[in-house]
Length: 220
Image (cartoon, rainbow, N blue to C red; front, top):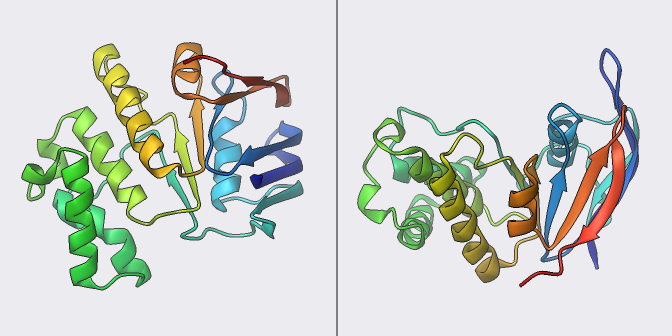
């Protein structure tokens, strides 16, 4: 069953970036979107998140058109989105408290449970600047997952990490995904990463870009 559908989407800035992009994301699946730097992967992700609108075409989540940002879609960016003046715990609690979906006590309880799963409970009172790059990425994943979105969008989330930390984070996220089976779009420009994390890989190519190939990763 398709959780997300993208039909004939195009976008132009100074020049055409995307043209007639169409694909579907299956529910409870981890799909990778891959392509060279600058081909429009982040633009497409921002459309799915509702941050920008397409010039043509339609995007939908569970049949409902995506026309604006909403808590049912969470995007983890390439660069850190943690508030440096907030503790780890306050950063993770921020989403549900700001949206009003949880009260303070419930948000704290859920945040502490997530930090326990992420191996970060002992760091709940630290600030982002006191954490390593890999730890900050784990906090951001917890910050996103506490909102229980219907679609998780990860825009090159492990970019900039050293090779060993990146490999550990890939394994770590796969374990989390196996537990949650949250519909996920994972964006990367690295072939090895796409094969490691993806169940299916969508490959963007061309100028303007479109989906050139869809490959099922039939590996253990």
